[in-house]
Length: 181
Image (tube, rainbow, N blue to C red; front, side, top):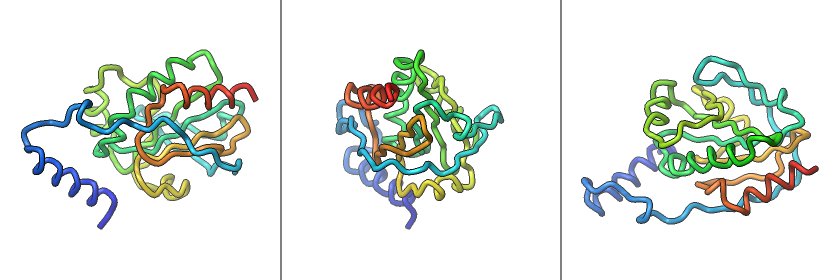
């Protein structure tokens, strides 16, 4: 059973247990985490993907900036929940050498655009298409969402598996400390 199949089965079970007609409210869900796991710096794998508009983005061209890379999919509940906080983080650090890249795994542009059109604020960061999951494998992503923080030298210095509240003070502090180096 794939990760997607497992998540779909779990969501179906939750819907049956709580009444399939009652959508989950944010107040009913556990809080998103607000920490990243620090790692010994390691070179980031290549990441070269097109965004929803067909523009090519290359991680190598972002040297000198701190980059938050988030692997996600629209069918993933914690991925959907953390998207607005990524945009708030991007906005909070808009005048800094900071970039957010959201890498959608295995979906097409229409599916992603349908999801983002339902958000209160449309993401201002690039959403990259990893339709073949090649980047996901290169980055050794084992589950969604998975996030990596890349320093100004192109090294992975922190990561997280699972949903995050990216504009939480703890994560903002981590990013700001990297911006000062």
